[in-house]
Amino acid sequence: MCFQSKLQIAALCGALLITTACGSLPKKDENTPSSSSSTSTADAPILAASADPRADVVKAMKASLDAKSFRKRMTTTNSSGSNINSTIEFVAPNRAHITQDMNLSSGSIVKKEMIITDKDSYVKNGDASWQKSPMDLGDLLAQFRDPKIIDSLTEKAEVKYLGADTLDGGLMLVYQYTIKDLLGKGNNMVTKAWIGTTDSLPHQTESETDMDLGTGKMIHSKSTVTYYDYNADIKIEPPTL
Image 1 (cartoon, rainbow, N blue to C red):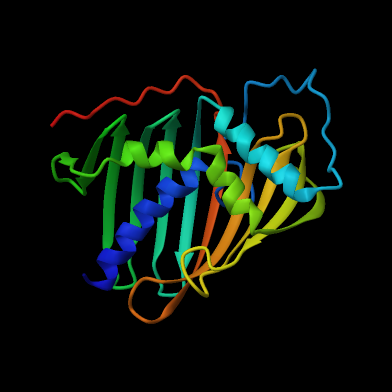
Image 2: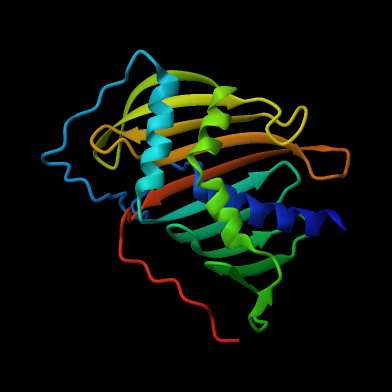
């Protein structure tokens, strides 16, 4: 399999993985939708950082699992010269709609779209027709949303509290956690998470990792994600084949 094909597959799988837990972050701009949740910020208590930053991060991850739906925008760049822009809609427990524009280091642009509805998955490449995928990605989504996965990830993470910050006018608590050898030896991931003080939900994250896609060369990747429309009424249905 060529490097570009591996990169495309890694991008789709990465989008699925990050959809189910905490993702990655850009600075807010005026075109970025506001983050929101079902919690009323007017009456919600203001959360403070505890003496256990690991517990705070686990609480935020598990709070995101309780959300019935959300949307997110993700931008990924890597040292090979490729960049990927993704938009993701998610409805618990296993429905997702992912669109991706991949600008590869070769100069070519690849557009992909994926819809997951329960046990059925569909893929669309560029302007081609929708095709049903033999992969059960709905089951994969459900597995990654198991709270035990969060526990196993954070057990070996180095977690620290960085301080308070504001995002879109809201007060956030910022944490950093490092997971070593996440995807194999030397494949480390460092993530900063902006967690809301009124809802304990992740609103933005920023992740950097080094990975080997089978070429023998380490690739440095940075992903930025903004979460919004928590618990919105999102409909995801199978496409017309």
